[in-house]
Image 1 (cartoon, rainbow, N blue to C red):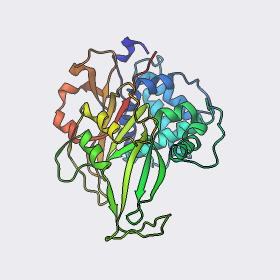
Image 2 (tube, helix red, strand yellow):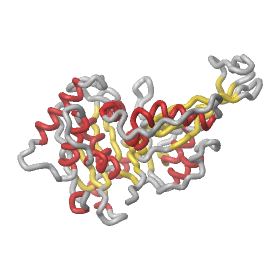
Image 3 (spheres, rainbow, N blue to C red):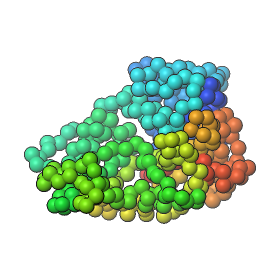
Length: 350
């Protein structure tokens, strides 16, 4: 991708309540890794979602062919998605941006299943924790999806400690979006605060039975549940729990800060072979912002443009459907109060 092309971005028109779709595409295509991968895909009837993403990527970066109607392209893309078996979102409705991202990546990865997949190694008869995590990773990400799976997926481990016998049990989990909760009764938080709160230990007092001693967790002998990261993806998406089950929206300001990465590292499982890795730091690519309530609202995105001078306000643009403006024209407090998802990436090494 040339520097000249990356200095201009173009949003997407709203074609029937598609601001959720537009905001996710803008934030995702601000990732150099994602955009470069999409640009490498050849058009194919067997990979329609990926092919459309390539056309949308060209428009976003100002590289589309003359005569291409972006309105028609967006309408065709929307129709394709709503006919796709991986999509459950309804046409013409204000859908959830987080759910759309998950379904979009799921559809793309299915189209590229079994591409660039390494040869499967023979596994030992008895599995220790590291082997158990690796087996789960291979079965759910590496062998089905290869390179694209490892780019967008991370892995964590749920640990339960029995209060009676102190036995430990571990359950692997793969994630595409790392969802964070807000600390209670706070109106202004850092991302690291949300990481700390989301990964805090919890006492379980019911509905859990120890596999070793058969003790059932209770208020007198609680089990301890902890969540730890095992590996982080190349493209990291953070999601924030803005809405409660009752529909209440938390409007806390979210402050981005350098300590976010240190917090993630601190909550890496000590048994992980990646715990001591020091890869390139994450770069902010884009964020999705939600305004309104659980039933009605509007999505926009904030996009970082590689190639502009570092530290300048002109480096970041607000993309509201097909309207692109400088972030300096917007109230930073309102942007912080509306952050719904954030996309980061490890820099590409050439």
